[in-house]
Image (cartoon, rainbow, N blue to C red):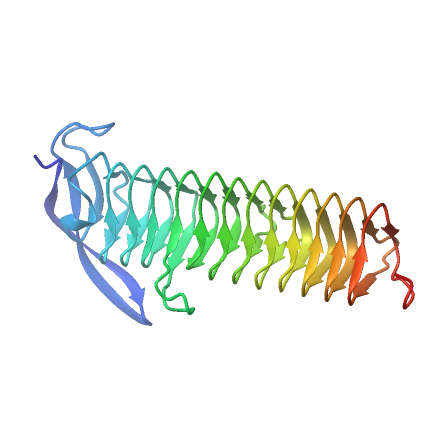
Length: 309
């Protein structure tokens, strides 16, 4: 027995595609029986054909302002709440909740994931050598007020709030990505965040943590404020970075309980570990580059003289 039917009333929905304005004809869903928290006769969102919403399970499109079309599918017990737009081969299944968000392109949201509060999910395949990889959000991941694009992967117990995640970036484990009303967190290219790591945007101008080009933050590490991590940078253990601004680039590793704070540039094969502290004062800048190992309880508060390390 079907759980819903399509109304006779139609609605024209206009949307952009490849620089052109297109139109699709939609019909509203009407519940035929009671299931979950839906009662017979309840109207819901608008779809282009029955393949967009499974007749099986408790999946439902709750808002009459929501649309699902262009090969997108809602299956199992997935729910769309408030005003949502889901299109262009997006698949939402299992127990996923989507609230007030736009999802477009070939992607898969599954498990118990939640996409909440004005997210924009824009999937795109074929941009990298890993052409078959699709954007996925799954397991118990929670994504809120964020823009997730291309082939990004978000899964595990992660929490992502007010972030921009793009290309093949990956967030997993129990990581927390914490942007705010003033600044997003940017995780781009092939960067990854995992373990119990936290990436925290600061308040004020340019306090935007940015991970690019394969940068990795993992374990219990914390990166906060105006920090830019670039090629083959790895932050792990209980390391803590607080930018003002801070730039790490090209084979820099920070681990142990190391602390870096302030206006600091570190680049080209530098290893910082143990309880080492690198910290600036009085609007000065520290610049470390070249093959160096800094560990123990070393404390650096100014750029060392040539050859002193």
